[in-house]
Length: 221
Image (cartoon, rainbow, N blue to C red; front, side):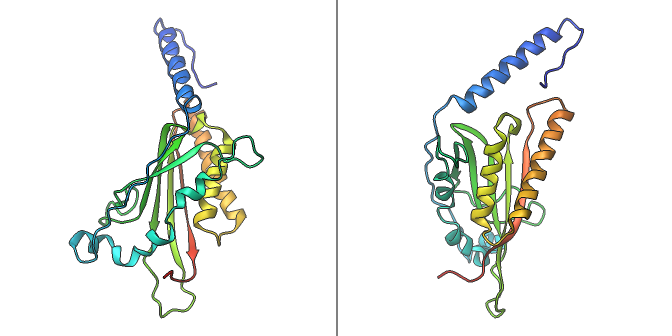
């Protein structure tokens, strides 16, 4: 679908190399066992040290309680052969809590980081960036967060698996969001990815997805 033809003597060689790479990538994605992920303890800084203060750990510590075992709640949604199956995704939490996609210019930002696997193949990253804990004096103040997901190379993967995975992550993290808003955001990200795949005539395209919203309406003890 995406491989170009041409007239030079090297085109046949390049096409064969691309085809071989394509086949190898498909094998890594679909012919490998489900990854056994190891849970790592997050190395949080103290409230008093300079890095902890700069990253806002004191007002973001709530997220590490609220999102504890988030990955387990995603893993149970893989039910091969059943009517509802989001696909063979695995999230592996990282011990380093300093986010890569947030706060690059304004200093360190702390949150939860995961590697994303499809079967055994590492296909990207997921980051949860908690906003500061709201002032307890304001009744009804919302705890909120931001989600960033990168998947590469997205066009190799089944549409229904990517859509179901992103939908499950958003629904788990932001239970107060509207279904229509969630669906529109995911559809937009997937459409942009396939647009670029066709425009660049390439399968080697990243899907970038961001979402934000309320996660809970009260502090957890």
